[in-house]
Picture 1 (cartoon, helix red, strand yellow):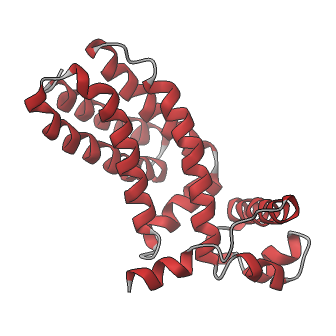
Picture 2: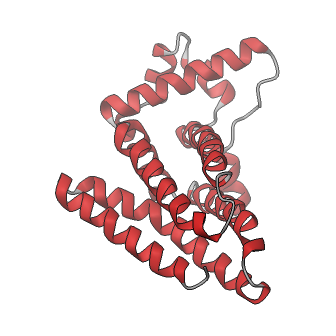
Length: 208
């Protein structure tokens, strides 16, 4: 069953030729623009095809479903996230840098999602679609591992397993906290982020 769900959320084919890559880029850019304008639920494959410069058959040639388009959009969002993430954790040179890096990661993530309604809607859709939830969890595990691999050598050996579990939870819960903050008014949303920041600091201090 899991394999069936994943097949429905994966592109029919990966682009090898420049022309195919350009078509896929056009489909993805059009979908993201429409998501920002009207929300995911209102976006149709037919409209994506028409505005991307081709018939709906062209869209289905590469993507079996709207979920497959969302999956690739999330994949690209994750690639950019990893690059930004890597740049931030590269600045960690000792235990004293870890908490500041965690603050930067939280602020960077919140800033990106808050600044782009399409990203907000994409994140909500990933959480709501059972066929896509595994993408978010897998990406969280990957980013948590990146963080732990960088910080773990600074910890005692017996602390590392527990640290990994805590970091995974911090990263996974961050998405929900940011989504909550964005539904609140500006002041309440700010307090929500700051409360979560305090929780992160408390947990990290147990290890550093």
